[in-house]
Length: 248
Image 1 (cartoon, rainbow, N blue to C red):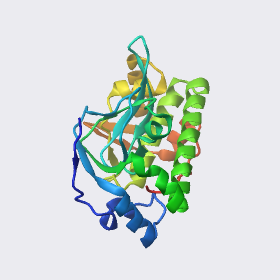
Image 2 (cartoon, rainbow, N blue to C red):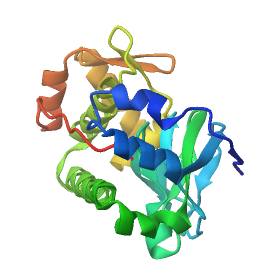
Image 3 (cartoon, rainbow, N blue to C red):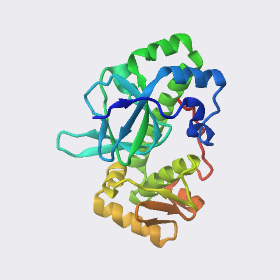
Image 4 (cartoon, rainbow, N blue to C red):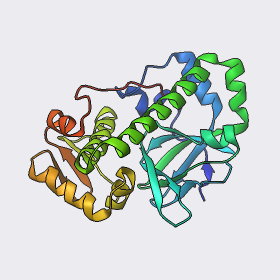
């Protein structure tokens, strides 16, 4: 279980605010977030941050590190619904619905900004602009889940895998996590298989196909997309898409 520790990164010094993935924040918004934040949490790889079916007294913004969101089935299998990256806001389900409808599990060491769930409703009364940002992020998450359903229902195995790899790669480039075209890939191949609804063997086969076509390569726990436009065409995705989002 995580422990809340004192803040070490003031909101005014937040490195995420300098990333092209996020809308700029006003000085008043930064000051509000600093007041809203109650501390930070450090999480180890494999640690569950939020559990399906349980409540939480905290809300989080991922400051550093990556995680997997998944839903468990009674058979013991699971469906990965999305991957979580720096800047993602997690825990809103427990705040609104009383319990989490999915599990969030760390895949790397993580640093989380922690907020008191009980103060969330004051956000809507006192700072409607920030409340709108929160609503916008929830709507965007719903849109992404719609794309995931379309992927599982209509794309073939190679297209699904290409689509998932492209989403992971784009998000990290926008977060300035790339180094000479390489980005971290801390997720297990089983995570990717569970995300695209394929067996592990089928997923490995499609990744090998994408590598043989000169579209993507892996080295250790890193990944590089060699031709984003061609990979987007394989994935039947928009090659130019870049979504700018609020940072909460």
